[in-house]
Image (cartoon, rainbow, N blue to C red; front, side, top):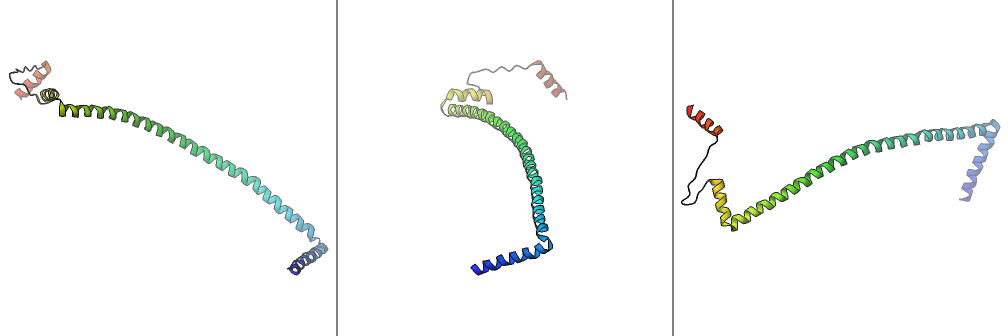
Length: 142
């Protein structure tokens, strides 16, 4: 292993000796420095470009995210209001179910209001307004 290392080292020194004769080491060094400066220039351009792209993406998606959050909050508020209404409606319906099962007076009142039923011995008087009378007369004439 030591011999292989020594061979490489001697090859490098031989190349340097050949290049020294032709002034190539200076050109080689210049090329190396030039390559480094080109990479640095690319990095100087690349890093700010990537940074600008990231910032623009963050701004675009954050504005969209803000709008989405606002819409979701509005929808949540509507759902909360609807939930309150439905809970009140459920409580009312539960009371009606309980009264229908256990309260005979409620059943009789409901039968009178909804079905127009009467008790024995009651007399029902129906009164019509002037508008309804006109409509009834028009139907009879037709």
